[in-house]
Image (cartoon, rainbow, N blue to C red; front, side):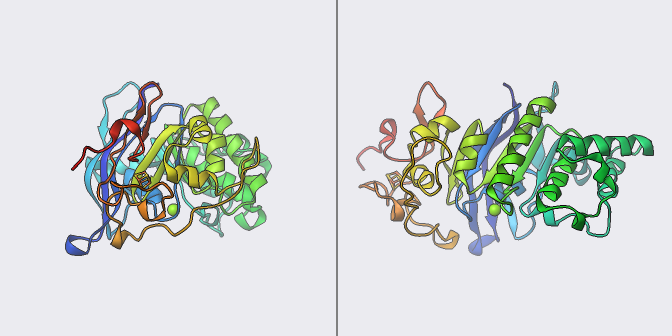
Length: 333
Ligand code: SF4
Ligand code: MG
């Protein structure tokens, strides 16, 4: 499938000049039409920063310091997202790319009904739509996410956490965007509810034909619901491959560590070992491969040279940033 969002060489810093720390480092990622791309990594790995940067929602001291973000509209020329004006951005967000934030279920306005909040989105972006049409569409959106349209008159406090989260997803889908970015969308919910909501979202994606960037620290959810997974560490993508490939055969030692930090949903039980040590401090990034102080497989070049993200299997489109990746051993230096 053709690309819908293309990120290349993206760099994001917090702060400027000598105090700047790099939170996203030279990230290349392509989201294809209809695909669910999972973004995994511990907190502080740069996943949320990447999502904010791509939607131009980054606020100071966050600054995009390099790279390119291109949106490919259906049947149109690619658009440079980083060059959009404030006005273009208002149209871009919600209509082309929408985002459901971490803890979104608590961001509904407590004094307005679900009806008001859903129709306000429509009113802002589709001013010509008659009032009755907006209400009708709000009813449809609620049914899409599995809530009875009878609940349209409810206030947020009258809904469960899972329902509030579904309302947020309905709002994100209101203007039929091409891309929905979900940043830890279900983390506040119990596991059964999380999986129910995600299963529904994946079904809707088939029905409504949008792509999803799904961000979470829980790699077991990504394995189940994504087509492809990119794993981030210290602001860089360290492995990218099909979800099944990563599950069967993680190539980056950090990917393997993440997989062993969560219980498997299917298949044989694995021992949960987690990853010793803690994520790197952006202000004191380890030299060479940032993972080397925690890596059980670190060897000679690892603390001196940063491994590039390079193709690992010529056939599958997998890439890995690790010196164990045979084809890309550093020369003697
Ligand atoms: Fe471990 Fe070295 Fe690979 Fe980094 S490059 S993940 S330290 S083996
Ligand atoms: Mg985050």
